Image (tube, rainbow, N blue to C red; front, top):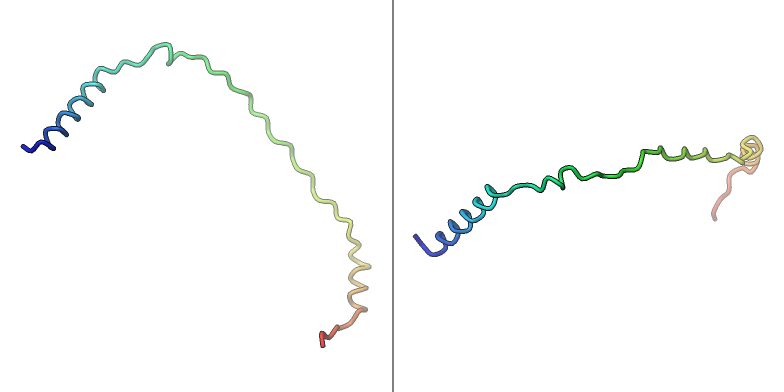
Length: 69
């Protein structure tokens, strides 16, 4: 075996040993978590339409075609 493969095997063995010996902290599992209650966002208002369509349409129709020459 080469030195690199021995190093990899040693690291893998160390990693697996630590994983097997890991014991989670029981206090962390039972920690009380404070959360806020969900509040739906405020519904946005519809935009106000201040346009007078009838008068604008009549003004447009009466203006005719404009040539840009």
